[in-house]
Image (tube, rainbow, N blue to C red):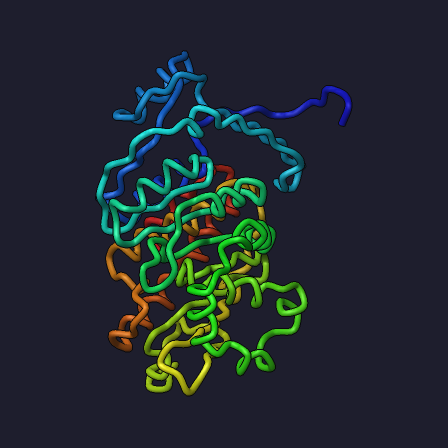
Length: 330
């Protein structure tokens, strides 16, 4: 640092939204990527490969990252100003995914177009934009899933504190989360992960926390939580642990999924995007974001999609590309 260094430089079309769409496209043929570029040379080059993009007034978004010899991220810089400009998104989809490079106003308007919306927080700084969005409390929540890291979860929680009103408290109180406190993993409880998830559930219904090498944690609001007692756990994709509140129809469900397969890390860029893109594609085929348990097959489908989404992320971790093409073979 503080001097020029010898290295290898590569260029590619990327970005969180593009990576998510690309991962989804390997699994779902009907995937559509909606974004915009600048009116410059980079924008024109991108449009040759990705037609149909909008054109903004600024320069094309750029992300520059530096990695060490093991592929781990050292430092990065992002200029996403053209994406942060307000613009209309009127596309309808069975499942829509938004990243937090977009302005809160753009996302707030777009949420009304689709019933099943997913938000990828993008970074712990940009995750705070979620608190500026127009969000409603269950059962009127427009967002059905968010996919933060532990750091991004803390940012979202901090940005949402002024939204914790009487309507929110009514939903939180109905879930009776205190009764499962003693059964929660101490490591993540001490970090405040469960507490933050529970308090955010009324707005998002499902929170998939990316834990890095420790896997993922899914915390969900369920209006038929007692039905979990009748779900067989013989699926090979089942979570390592399932904890849910009892005695109420409305409750919280906590499911922990460890990493299914260890991989040698080549490049960390795009692994989280791959997980979200693969997961969104599978949800569009078999939607488990409902607050009601419709069948055992619905729950088993959820477990399988999360398990395989982690496999997809692992394939990207093990390659130099931002999204591994091999995920199409999972």
